Amino acid sequence: MKIGIILTLSVIVLGFVACKGGKKATTTPVEDLKKETSLGLDMSAGTGELVAVMKKSACFGKCPVYTLNIMDNGRVEYHGIIHTEKTGAWSQMLPVDSFNQIVRAIQETDLWQYDDVYKSDASDFPVTTITYYQGDSSKTVKGDYIRPEGVRQLEDKLKLIANSEGWRQEEMAVPYGSIPGEIIVELVPEANEKSLETQFADQGLKVKNRIAPNLNIWLYTFEEEKISAGRMGVLLKEYRGVKAVDFNKGLDSRR
Image 1 (cartoon, rainbow, N blue to C red):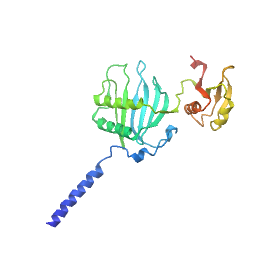
Image 2: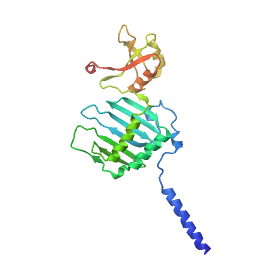
Image 3: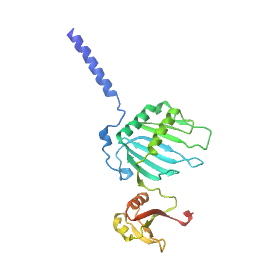
């Protein structure tokens, strides 16, 4: 009799362990969220893996075109392309509660239940693409206004993140036709143009010439082998004494 009881308890315990071990965590541990402690890093320096990506495409009008990346360490990245309040590359760390809520929303939507593509006959609607990454698998749902309601609700929640406050710019958007290695900087009246050369010597920043004789606006060159144009623009914008930054464009691009 005792042997039978012991065997029964063993089966129950083993079954409990098997079920517990087979259950996949639905949220990222807080410890993982603490790995990234600051912003102001280059976008490629992030250590997290992708959890989800949402891409918004263009339309015939002024539809916002951007990409939103959500990483498994709580970092989110925004790449604004056109018709967006934020252009260029931006990033922030989500609060733990906000991150866990959006991950739960993504998982509860269960994108795997939907078709890969939903496309209407209309040609003037932006296409939204949402991809969820889970281990070695991924699921993408793409479509315009005829997408299922569950997918549209998930998009609304992702858009709240994209339009939230707290973003920090990582790179400026570089306009088409910009001359490589050249950037225009407007300084406050009392600032000396040579001071930037000293501050950004590691990036090879050099004064080339003055843009306007009566204005403190200068054309600089820098070494794109050492820093991207977009990142150079952000660093200059954040430096004291700088009023505005723009990229030098070829004559054909000036309109």
